[in-house]
Image (cartoon, rainbow, N blue to C red; front, side, top):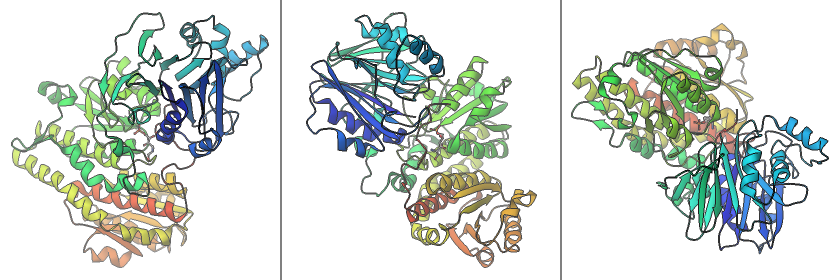
Length: 607
Ligand code: AGP
């Protein structure tokens, strides 16, 4: 949710902290701040708003070669300068930055207030600084360990004390924390984007671990001071991948990367000779894969939509019963874990709290949980029983796009693998592969027509309400289209199965509410056309995403965007791209902050 960072080394800390926070800004952009120490004095700068506002108040030449920083997604306390992090104790001895939620902060705060302490913010995090100060007897690491054992909730914390120059203490429970190993300098961050400009050598801190970091090294222990050996891993991403590379926005770049990213998700995973998919990361033997009798998928947001679409593929093509659920609901409904059932946790960031905790709950019940994730080394892939990395590269824009089509690709591969282990013939498997291999070029051809969606956005971005309608595998795509428009243009949008609207939502239809229909030439085309006519009969405006040359649809709709003809199997890839672009251009028309829409954050690490 929030982004935290720490630096200790020979270089002035402030510019490094601010540059790192800029890269973490997609995790939360309500306010930001840094604390740098020099000659045993802690100096804090914090400001409401984006990093750009913070830059304005931090002196260019700020002495001090170690410090911490934070970019905030507000959970407790309004968005203002005071509630921004870092938080310090009353004597300005200790400074902390925190990502997560302290659920018992009120009782801790009341106890400290009874002892005469005076708090200055409305946040849950401030109590951490006060607790550490209260327990401090000259050893910051000890005080941190004692303090975190009083906390209920989630945290990724980095803190410093003015009397222990050059030392940073990091601790984690539920929120991600990565250590970066440089030459005579060290970094701490919520994720590798904060570190990659300086080093690719990283260590992932696990729950219950505390890391003491100095410029020349680090020591990891658990809360009972037992030493923990840590594996140093290498980041596989390049720095320029987290740059815009000439595009105006990360979202635009990530939409236009999709023909390459889908290709990357397919790379090395198509077995042409045997007409099947290869997913070695599942950690399952052929016998175990064959004994799967049911698949259950859980996720949040866009990942949930990818999982929902997968349930259609697995039942229809692999003939395996499959259901998809919201992770946040699954976690608390005391689910029954049945034999021969495989679960998939789908998450781009690999850190979404709802999905992570649902996974842990299922694993506690003995389930095998596989991950479909993008961020290498994130928590869900590290704690899952196996899975598939989708290799989309860093996805910086808050609105997920390329991860969606790569998640779909992973599920198409799994469907092929399962189907070939059951009723699908070698020839059918090879046909399936041919269709999958045609996707990147067909997506490029669809992207080449982006200009048409810019024109449609100009016309329809004035709408206050918008309906997205599809059937079959295009129902989850309609949900995804509505989510994209909502989250970046702030236009109220709903996705529905096109058949469902006559059971109520059709009451919303009027000349001002456009209905966008996904009408590929598949087995449900005629049904969707009837639904379009029902809306037209009520003077509703109809936009159709159809296939080139479908004149019947063009005659009914007010506006049409036609994708290249393709097999029904792969239509979802071609149907979703125009919806991503329409949302992007509508947001531009309305002057929205496309990459960092209001109230959102890229990785939701709190419940
Ligand atoms: C999608 O555009 C949103 N950013 C959001 O719904 C996101 O999909 C959801 O928070 C899940 O994130 P994850 O894939 O990283 O778990």
